[in-house]
Length: 171
Image (cartoon, rainbow, N blue to C red; front, side, top):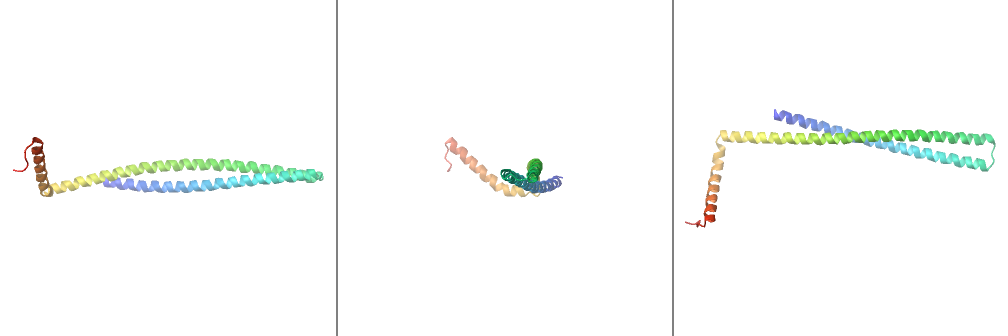
């Protein structure tokens, strides 16, 4: 049961990591779209500046009324283009913020899944160690291996006790 749970958590972790990578790609795409909207806004500002300069030139040159009206109309169109560009920029910014929040949540879920998967791996390793120890105990492997070690530890303990009592260890 633990092995199955561990495998399911590993699969969940893998899916969470894939979702996190997808969110990273979406964030990069949203960032690129926002940058493009910023460039479009800057272009609209440049067009407005050009139209205003053209209108100033026409007014200083005392051009006929139809040319001035055409320049005014072009200026209004440029301002409408700027409003549209600013609206798009605000929308792209909101989209980028939403995707950034999704990425943050995806990273948080991935960290949680990593913790769960690590806990399951640790639990699985502990169960495997207990099963191995039980198998050793069943086949009497442990006492033969641990027997000499225990006797050496007992001798060292006895020597330490004698040393603390002031008795000589050599007899």
